[in-house]
Amino acid sequence: MKSEITQQEYDAFKTFLQDACGILLGDNKQYLVKSRLRKIMEENELGSLGELLKRLQRSSREPLRETVIDAMTTNETLWFRDNHPFRILNEKILPEFAETHANQPVRIWSAACSTGQEPYSIAMAIDEFRRKNPGKLRGDIRIVATDISRSVLDVARHGEYEMLAIGRGLSPERQKNYFTATRNGGWQVKPAIRSMVEFKELNLLDRYLLGKFDIVFCRNVLIYFSADLKKDILTRMHGTLNRQGYLILGASESLNGLPTLYEMVQCHPGIIYRAK
Image (tube, rainbow, N blue to C red; front, side, top):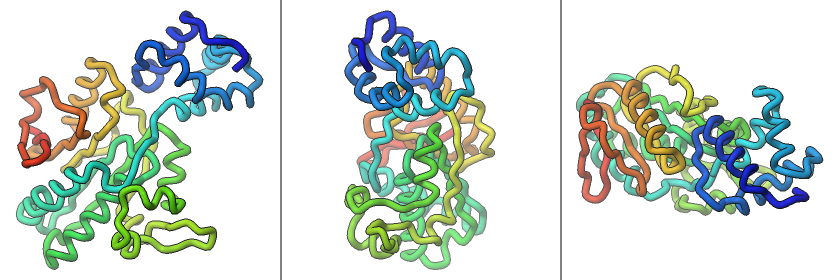
């Protein structure tokens, strides 16, 4: 990027990003935009953010649009992130489902799944519960994992990670139980765990044609949306939840409002929400 970003260009880019994927950039984030888009600008021989915006406005189907959104969406993730949600899953939700869904299928949605660490962590937690409680939760358990980015979904589907990524939140025991070493020095999720997860491309601003779920994980993504968009997303997520199904948000996120749709469930520590 040859020139500095003007306020007019920055405001126009903020509008583009919010319209495209709901992400609301704060004020004075020009450095973040410049650092994330520098390589894209150089590869496309674009000298300014204004030139990039003109190119994006020509066609909503241009591959460059997806590349820009990929660069601007945060894909920070790790295994068993924050720990509490997985403890709640294993100690509260799955024991409850073992009684209410003993032989029935269970469907789980991992929204904004990035490179797959969250849905695979969920699958591992379920396998651990079943091993500790033989004969319980005998029904089919399916995890649908979605993200707006095709590139991170490609990584997730393959399920192979470098050692640096493996070390972020994954215990040596789980690495041994659920991963196989690859020839190029990486580690791949074992087929039994990969087969539990189906990955799909989805923009959280679009309609959700995913069917019904018993549990929805929507963690560490709503903080990037405006209050109105957050409310809209949570309302539509409620429409995907079966009655008495659970919504699990990120540690820094809360459900303000929508008392007619959800009730808070205190888990000490941690909070989840039950669909009414």
